[in-house]
Image (cartoon, rainbow, N blue to C red; front, side, top):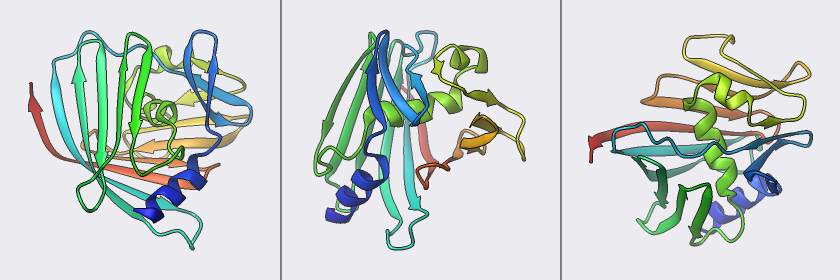
Length: 188
């Protein structure tokens, strides 16, 4: 668990900020993304996922977590447990308010950054574009099927690939990749 704390602290520190209009995540020094409100027109579901984190730095080990993504109208809850089953984090997003509890990850994981990655992969491109601040462009025209890419001045920042049940996120600037593999999906 100590490694998880250290790795997330190093990989994701300095990614968050608060701008007028809501919670925002810093995706690069010049690009931020302010979270969209939680979707209200969805069927309540719970998705259990395997979360794998890898880093460009060869001295940092890859990590595996168990995650739960609960989607309710107007509310999103993300939670993860470590290898020993201990709760590592709980993030709740509703009414444009972000609440989080972090256990064993002191200040290292920015909830707004994590939700930004999820929203960039799921929400319509037009909605997402209205929430980007800075010189950024989000497209679905990158190598491969089921792909989205956020770039700034021609330099890729984030690439999201794969179908909804096995999605890979690569944050090129921060040197971190995350793969979410669906294990169970159920209606609530």
